[in-house]
Image (cartoon, rainbow, N blue to C red):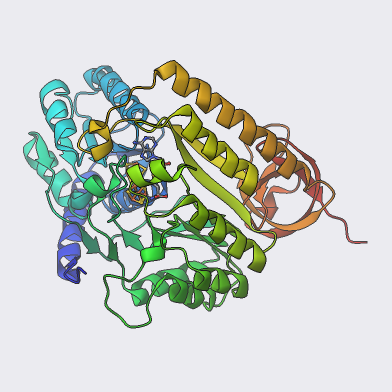
Length: 474
Ligand code: SAH
Ligand code: SF4
Ligand code: F3S
């Protein structure tokens, strides 16, 4: 057990905010506030990091833009989970050469999970000369100092610390909207699933102190946030590194539930090897905890699961689902699946289809295996052709789409208390809401309903969305 997580001292964060103040003084001399753009490519954890980068930038006196041409500072917060994610970053990064040519003072920064990979940092150093600053996930807390170095000296800065990771409290956060909020409860991952890059780019598992998490949740509840998602790569192992008796994820969930306020609690992601019946009991008991569980199973065949180093069997997974449904019959269940893991045969893949049929997930996130440099799976023999993998992938998607459509159709006629969480950008409906289990509902109504819980009668459905109308009181 690692109880020696580095905690960045409050003095050090104050020092960083000192750099923010210095940059702000420079920016204040300009006729209008300079503009910043933070572009996020990854998961919710990445999104939460972007909110911290924006918090720092805001303290530095930057305003925000969506336009790459206008931005004085561009930060690409990258994701390394699959090749496709990396290609998107390189594509967009390449295009910034032209943007910067027209605006030579523009500062281009790359951070996040790709930046933490040495081979990526080397490639940027050599082939993307217009990039000024590259910093890994472990250096995020010192972004103000790094940016100050660029502004005061102009030269390139690379900061990719090779370490297990730290915890920094007190970084300012600039959240998107006033309804939904992410709260990281832990960072890193110790699981080393054989296909996955995350443990290499996010460091070891480390938990925030419960009092820091609860203070953040209390503040969000007081500010009127309605939907709070607790984040971690494997929230079920929360607290193991803290060495505090009785402190685990189920305990934390109860503490968060006890915070006064009208809000929903969601969390992701859960790992089946650590999900416990005790957790399900707490979910069932806690009123604010949303009836939704995202429980990635990845593959339905035990040999493949073992090769993936997932450390559970298909039977164990199915047992968890049964135990959960016993306690919360209307639980919304979602999952992740990988198709085409090295050596997976089509017969083994069919065990994944069987799990779909047996569990009938509400929705599924499906991925074709993508080799990640440095992971064990990338060195495993992978004889199946791309075409065969694509054909299996299509079978998976078709089956799930049929199941999703049926499950969605079963909502029609029901009236549910939904949270209006965003204004819709689709002209056919004004607002989007979420059912307690997190399913998307489109409906029309007064935009002032944003951020409120409303009773919606579900009138229609598709594979991905529900359609509803405000329920009239009888
Ligand atoms: N910590 C989370 C997952 C984070 S990554 C968990 O364990 O559940 C999100 C999803 O991306 C994973 O669940 C997996 O399905 C997929 N994924 C991860 N690495 C991948 C790879 N190399 N190729 C394809 N999909 C991958
Ligand atoms: Fe990756 Fe596995 Fe960790 Fe999830 S639990 S982040 S899939 S190594
Ligand atoms: Fe991507 Fe990093 Fe998240 S690799 S999925 S942004 S933890």
